[in-house]
Image (cartoon, rainbow, N blue to C red; front, side, top):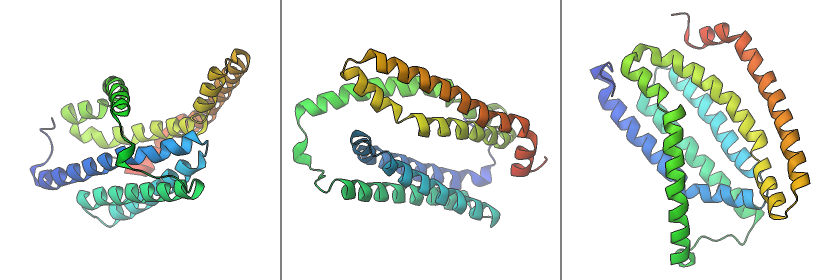
Amino acid sequence: LFPQIPATILPSLRIAMVIAGISMSLGLPASAWSGIAAGIERYEIPAIAVGSSRLLSAAALIAAALTGQSIIVMACIVLAARIYSFVLQFALVRRAISTVRFRLAAMSRSVVRELFGYCVSLTAWSASMLLVGGIDVLLVGRFDFPGVTPYSVCSTLIAFIAGIQTAIFGVIMPRAATLHARENPEELGRLLSKSTQMGALLLLFTGLPLVAFASPIVGRWIGQQ
């Protein structure tokens, strides 16, 4: 995929990819805990766990980069931060609902069929979204490997804006589902109208500073090369 990668970093890159894969796989069962928090409308639980872990991860990665640590060390930092997030989220869920238990005996064929059907559709959705917004870095790395760094910085800034939107408006989805289940189209329409207006204003106020100061931000981040 990336023939321009220097041969000297290939061994460490392979190990880092394995560590990253382990980190992602651990997140699959841990997603059940965030689902419980959303089900009881305790959105602060995943916000605290994920937010604090990302702040710690960012600080540790900056320190590792400034001290010249390897990409393996950075991958381990990301893995440790994610594990911290999973453990903290589980502890907060247990504190909110002390009766929460996870047992294999709760699994049944009907549950497995339902999860399988959901995962098949979700896999198709995720693959489609990968083609839309996830394969761009791969293409840059394939055809212009030196450009990966500035392109990734710009993508991170865009993800920052999208993350703010998701964090604020993600809690609207369960509320909308509740209104739909109660067959309350008037209230659902008002919710859609207000959230759309607020979303547009938020996008404007978060995006304009990055557009206006894009050059100094990127230059400060990765230098003027």
